[in-house]
Image (cartoon, rainbow over all chains, first blue to last red; front, side):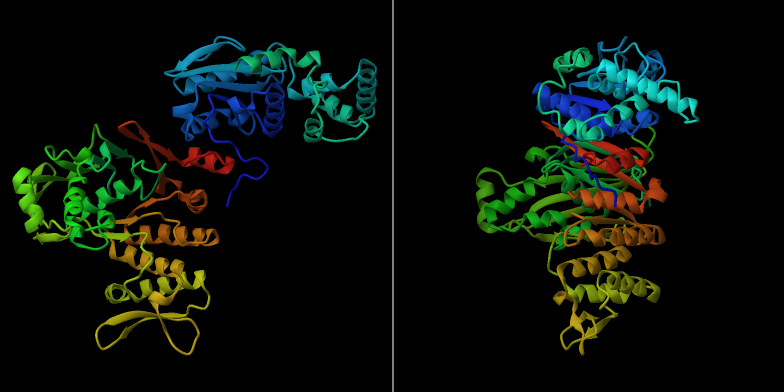
Length: 214
Length: 348
């Protein structure tokens, strides 16, 4: 019998829903909103990968509480190789619901009676990349960043299939994790960021400002 | 008969509600007081008005206090906001509301309600109310049944009839009427059906080997072989096994019609739910029964989704949502239901 395991979603009894791409994003935004003291205002759901946004949004709209409690919906997606293409995918999913789509990254629009909708493309609405791009930039020092670039270049020269597209930032992120005092994964990082220093990184400034406003 | 749309007007807490796009198996969920059981009551009353004389008529469960005054009020509360001026209207359609063809409509009206001094007389004399069932099929009158409802809450006189639609009901009652079950067991037209039911109970409790009718001096009862040196009367089995027995026999009783299950999960351990749903799925198909089941249980929904995954068109979930006086039905099917259940999103 399918059952939620790692994550038991809170009821949709909060005014805002963040609809994010995957479970990593879900845990990241959970921590970010807790850091901002806004977790009790925002419910988070994920659509299990960018290919599932189109069929997950109708299901989300049918969830108990969506039609009665939810006033704002933010769809979050990775830019991958094109921020513009990612935003278009968000608007296409919204329009398929016969709702009005927002005109631009971070902009709000009344999509449907009683519902405002916005789209946010990671890492910043302009650049290629994804969540891991931000995390890598937040964790790595300039000097270590050079080491990681050199490491990936060396690996590539010696036959390792390290891609050169937007996914390279994921490789950078995972390489960065191996340089920490206690090697861990994304969840480990997020579990250890109780203090403000992690979130004080300038790379999160735009995102946190947006999350304060939702 | 397969109902595609069921429409309810002015019945109990429901001013107006349409369940469109019904399937073979229909789950009904929703918060407390959303109207789930009222939908089953409406279906039961629609399918077989004569059920109002029976102990398993679902509204009868609300009539436990049969003091005269409360009984009078109870009958009245079957009408929305106790407005007796407008009739209750229950209608089954083939197709949707706009293009649907009415298969059958049942209207229930009060022709004589005690008022003022007369009401006092009624209270003292326990005189009956006059209620009328007006039945039409495909827009043409098909029956006009007067009913005298006893002031004490029972039915004084009812000339109805036959079932309009074959019907079975599984209530949340714990007690099993082993005499009635024995009668129904005896009417099962195929021994294969009896074998299927025995196999179902055996899955729930492998000790169960045989079910048989035992003739006693006063009546016949249903009893079960569990490997002991004597048979056990069915009413001494565990609550879940008794309910499974009532469910499986009740579905056979509903052949070609409608089977209603109130609070589907009651009495069943969650590990048994896939077995129960598998039986319901197969029996509904073989017997051409349309099933309506209420539930509050996430496990019941998840296991239904799992069992119907390959025949997802045969399962629809309706969530009733009440907004002030209005109730709407949110219909959830196929991929959306799968997405919600597999993600643990709140369907209920």
